[in-house]
Amino acid sequence: MPSAAVGMLDHPLLAEEVLKNGRADVVAVGRQFLRDPYYPLHAARVLGAEIAWPAPYEKARKDWKYLV
Image (cartoon, rainbow, N blue to C red):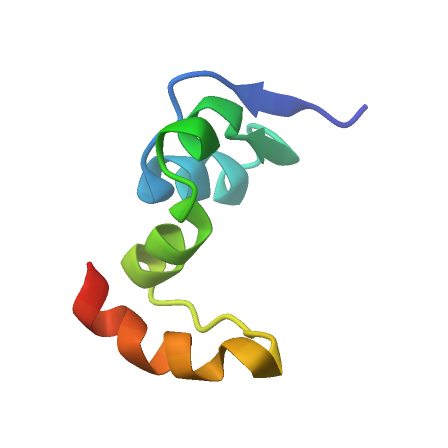
């Protein structure tokens, strides 16, 4: 049965560890999205992941490294 991890998973490395070790199938980060609407971008940076940006936002992607 699939399971979700919720609560206190506010750091990308912690969420990644939970998924990689099979403790959960999905990580819910609702409160973290409320605290930081750019959480997916911050998490991608911490994890070293490259994410796809929509074409109209390419300029923002190029400037993103200076914003955080």
